[in-house]
Length: 112
Length: 113
Image 1 (cartoon, rainbow over the protein chains, first blue to last red):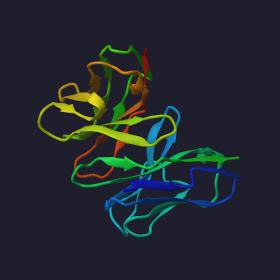
Image 2: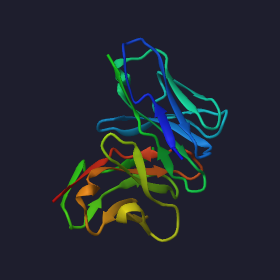
Image 3: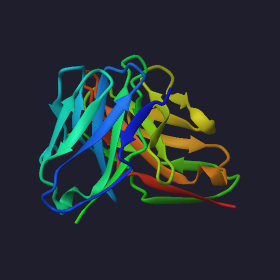
Image 4: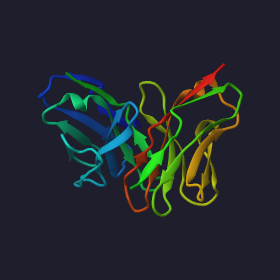
């Protein structure tokens, strides 16, 4: 089991560029999440997906879109990157029985 | 509004001494409570959770946490700290019937030899 994988690990963008962060899990979890982590702010939920085919906004959805491609994959897209989106992005998945969330290794994104 | 507070940005403790990392929450009803640990340049790892039952829950790496409903607290504890416990610790809460976790801002634990 690879658990939760994320690509890329690092990315530098210029303001206005677009990109998609990829996330996949091999634990057969229904729920998946995207967070951003900023110093002194903890983790803030961007979007989540309770099941394949559904997505919902979290605390900070503006400037992002998501796609739950299938049960395994949940991607996060920045259509027009802004310096305020410089952050570390984490994907997570969870199972309903234990309620614990399992996190990927993160993507460190810098927007210049 | 739901919230989680970790009042200490950093906790320093000598190796072998007991440690406590504090967490209080403001959530309606009976929430689920979690602790996660983050090592440098890594994702978060699940440590333990409280769902129901015994107020003292045990988790990974010798950590435990005590749920106190009257004080709305869920403090993380370990009887004897190790240098390798040095990391960033996050408390999180989830309301029953929702999928969303709300995280505290994190507490950096530094264990000195």
